[in-house]
Length: 137
Image 1 (cartoon, rainbow, N blue to C red):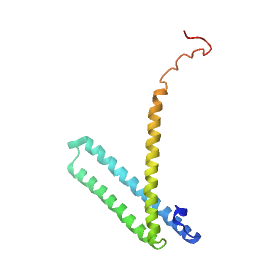
Image 2 (image 1 turned 90 degrees about the horizontal axis):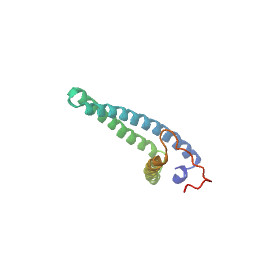
Image 3 (image 1 turned 45 degrees about the horizontal axis):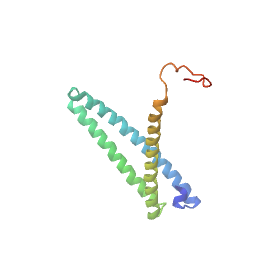
Image 4 (image 1 turned 90 degrees about the vertical axis):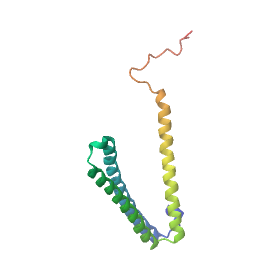
């Protein structure tokens, strides 16, 4: 990304520090979101056995984390403006989105290959090995 943005050494160092802080906070917020979402999935599976107030408060907590994520994006964007030109910010956003899409496609591809390979994996005891020099007919 540094090469794509064509940053000077000074701006590159500032950018890397800011981006690392951004990424760390982003991971933390998304982890918090996943944990709340897991609770919500569990509650929805239990249906009416969960008190309505508990479900409502969990939904509110999820919305609150969503707002924190949005506010964090807006704050970091302001901080990036102190380092980057508007066109560089645009390049960064496009780079990140393309990178995420490529990573998602790689994961999907690897999972697909793994599932295709499952038919070649033997379960249980291995089959008896034939003597390949022997004529089977």
